[in-house]
Length: 218
Image (tube, rainbow, N blue to C red; front, top):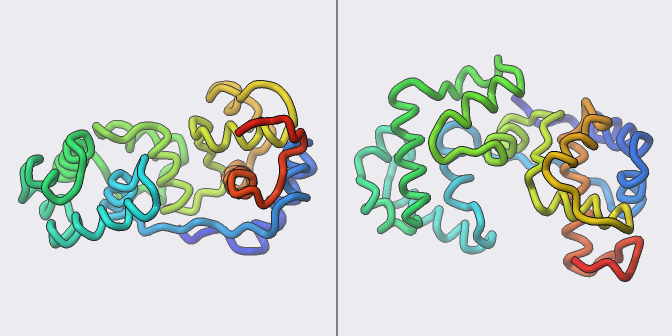
């Protein structure tokens, strides 16, 4: 599924700014935001798993070492190595276990990457979280970046929670449940809201802009 077009992103951003005062603050503060697009399928999901919770630089280094070590990043290719060998290619114990589990699930036919495009967002998430090592946050990120789903929102992402807290200018960081509830008003453009929040949070972290309340800490 292709990423949303520039015209779709502009329309989505305008609708979001009109729907929520916090997003209106962000709309004024940030420049145009593009859509993050990543490779999909088994290879794309494995790349996402291997790169989680490390810096961008470290993720690139790990992926290079892993993909060169495995050769063909396919379920059969991965299953040609045991978990210890995958650790030798730079994965943590947990990530090696997850990648092996995902490969096994694909070989059993429990994950249909080719059929995801025909599934609803909820159906696709449920299929993906049925694989050991794939939580809701990972599944939602996959649908956003690899499938271009415009209305997927990973409310468990701490940067999104912090972004809306800072845009509001006061209050505590919302919980995952609270942010899911607030994001209902952002349908059918919740994926664009996520991109706006990530951009806003990143700009504040880099001190390119200041939050509405300068006393707010990050």
